[in-house]
Length: 203
Ligand SMILES: N[C@@H](CCC(=O)N[C@@H](CS)C(=O)NCC(=O)O)C(=O)O
Image 1: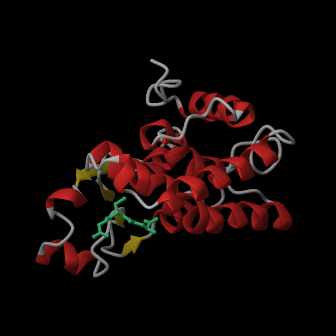
Image 2: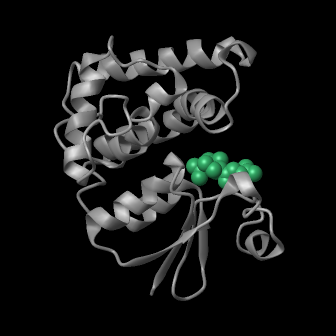
């Protein structure tokens, strides 16, 4: 298999490049690598990615690429998932950078602590909840104006943001007050062939 994707199936960051590869019909081998059980800290894995994190893509020629959004951008080069228009493309990157700094550190971290590590809500930093809701409100603001984060069509911005937003209820973030986000999630999940609402506490 030409492309190897090392990742954990429970991680939104890891699902992002997998969804892109599936959407674009890029063949890949998935190598399940669980960061909770030390698989990202073995000498073999650290030789691949010294940062000790998944996802990691390894190409046929041996080259290795880390960082979910960088892997997505490389896989999607020349596809409709990256807008042709320079400004729209920059807007897509605006959302991708924002996702890593203002969404994932709160929503993904609260999901990990509550759902996977079984921490008690009262033991968590309250900023995770307030900043997470601020991120959802920012998305809602955009998604009441356009069906996708960058205009009329699915881009990498939607794939990146859907990864943890669809599991936000597992982090204690109810989506009831974000109708635009819920309608957008339904759209993106349908585009990607994912089960609608499967992880959102709706069924
Ligand atoms: N910014 C990175 C974050 C990657 C990341 O945090 N991966 C987690 C799993 S979701 C991990 O491997 N954690 C293990 C560690 O940091 O030791 C990306 O988008 O790929």
